[in-house]
Length: 219
Ligand code: GRF
Image 1 (cartoon, protein in one colour):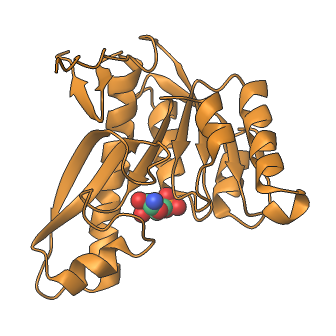
Image 2: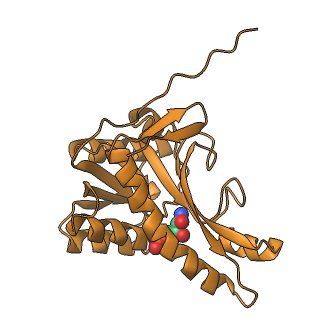
Image 3: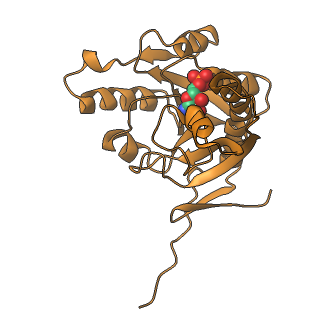
């Protein structure tokens, strides 16, 4: 049998200003890191829309403070999950979003969003995937399993939850006296570096998807 090599996919063409749509359910420190880096001109990108499934998400306030269109799409306001996701997609499209960034977004992404933004949805997860995937408690799990190194992962989102192609990872040592909070705090510092770095690579057209892996082209 001849195995055909997967053709590399470049998710977004190289651009000087990638239009980001951020989805967040909570406090939004990763969103803030993107807003700050963009304002300082440290990433060739701009956050142009923020959506949440929760009206009380601090992330929405952060977006409003930065003058970015921000809307809540609570599941209870829609007749189905599909209708809710379609409304999110419409909002992203209205704002000409090119790349969707999940930054602490709790709902599982369904086919409506996946199809609308194929190869153009990324997520940040607070572990070295595939370790501690599919959980909201990756930092506690790292402590529980006694790993000595953990970290964070930026990856493409597919129907395989936390299993899409990995773009980059940053490591964090687990200290003997770490609590869940102290470990989460140190991982978060790396998250705030990893996400902008991934966006820089994507905007430069340096990320190729090949099957379930990525190749990072030299700058
Ligand atoms: C982060 O730890 C991220 O890795 C996970 O959710 C958390 C979001 O934090 N997916 P914040 O809302 O960006 O502060």
